[in-house]
Length: 439
Image (tube, rainbow, N blue to C red; front, top):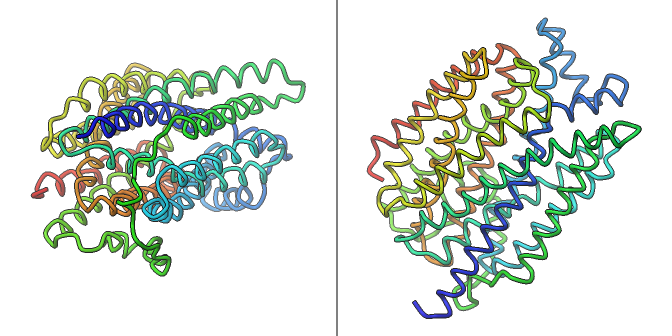
């Protein structure tokens, strides 16, 4: 490699790591506050938060389900909406970045995210809060772009390590975000006459989003040279960007060798099934602890701090050291660990058992996605990386769009234990698909 390429690679890896910290800090801050945010908006709107809550309440009364489960299904709908919008935007943004370059697409995406936090700052109604989530969902292609950039600047020998660096940065954000969010929420309650405790977490998120834009604008170096970009922008393929059938077939990545395309499609299916099940159970975790253990925002923050610390250790100590060709084995280990973690969480009736399950959960979470992504990023030409990774991330967004809603509905109807048991059992499908494959 030339000296310039080495310098660009090192700089971008460092900058993307900081980007990952800012990004995950913002998103996990909101996750830790979700149960209390919904309760807050329900309270200030006279016991109702609009058509969504009214519909959930009608279903709750018809099925004779305890009313305190309503927030779970309401949150699941909002979580799925956010990821559905990300599902629409990620592959389109990836293809645009193949033609115009990564940096412009990344900046536009992050500007939209900052705008969503600005709306959250002024969200004195449930409608504006939902609008903020809509804008954020449409703009959340930045994570997909970051992964694509890592694929641009690395080769197979160091790709897993590079993906792990972003993962480590995400884990650090996972640590900082919930804790600061919980702290700001307590401060907000103490310092606001109206009890609008969400105001300061929203301001903090907006500051992180703004710092992220400035950081990338001034320090990030374009990773896709003009001579390696796609020669044309094929907007006539827009349908393929949002059509699930086309996505599972990876139709945007043209002219990949037939055998490689078959492997990529299988990998995409494994990725989708895992994230569909995992994201649903992940999303309902804070609702489970809120309802079963009566955790408040501060306690949720401590729980997510524990998970984040372990993820940082596992990603820094294990994933970063994965040798080329070993990504499949490590992914299988991660899947094998996550399955019992959900069983333990399902039966946990005390903090010790809960945190035992969370420790296994953190290990599996830390290693599966980076390794599966590193495997997928090895396929396709340089000018196809955006399409390949964008499609993979879009499959993940589709899974995350369906997962929270499905899991929340199961939680709402059957309770936490059965929904987590079923999820753990269903995770055996992607586990054996990957284990028995020739990837």
